Amino acid sequence: MGEDTMSSEVSSSTPQQPVHLPSPIEVAEAPAAGKPVSGGIATQKTTPPPAPPEPRTELEITAEHSARAARDAVARYRQDKKEMEAIEQSDLPRKAKQEKLEALRPSLDHHWAEAYRLTKSNFELQDLMLRPAWDALQKVKGELEQAKKGNDQQAIHAAAHKYANTYDTYIGAQQRHTEALNLKNSKYW
Image (tube, rainbow, N blue to C red; front, side, top):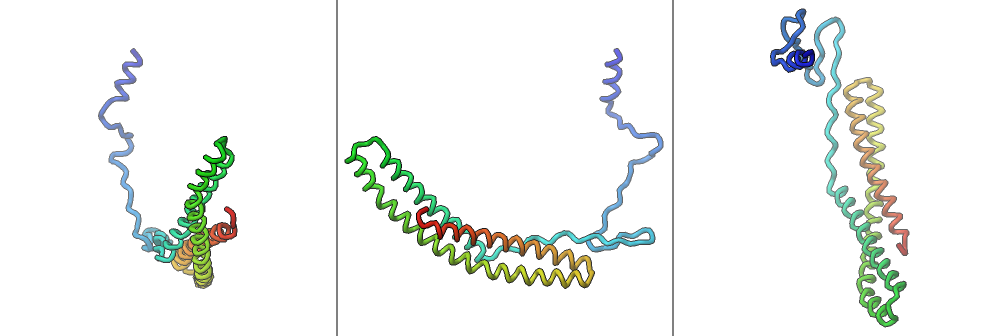
């Protein structure tokens, strides 16, 4: 019986409010970004929301596609090479092995040439992308240092956000450059 009484109390649909609170609590709205918070002796400014990331340039998008194309070309060549090794190590009669290898040779040669060409051009493109990314990072780093000297929190925040975006762009360019160099230097994949 005690359980029935408790369950009916809990499932009651009338809202229960403490006696000492006659009405619901109201929450004040936050001020807009950059506007002072009023009330009291001290005023406080809220920090503005971070700026959206800068849009990628067509050259950055092309560099990403070039890197992917080079990786895919090397993967196709490696797959052909594995297939060739599997045929060579199979228990097929010598003549059957030779026929399969001859049938595979054009694809292997084509994929090798494609991988060589794409890894070389990808490295050249990634090399071109790295220096401007580094220069942009150094420029934005200088802007951040200047903003820190001015002690304007909004300017520091904006410069720091810009630096973070530029740093991400530089790191992406550096990673693609390193990958392109490794693919280019892997002569036999």
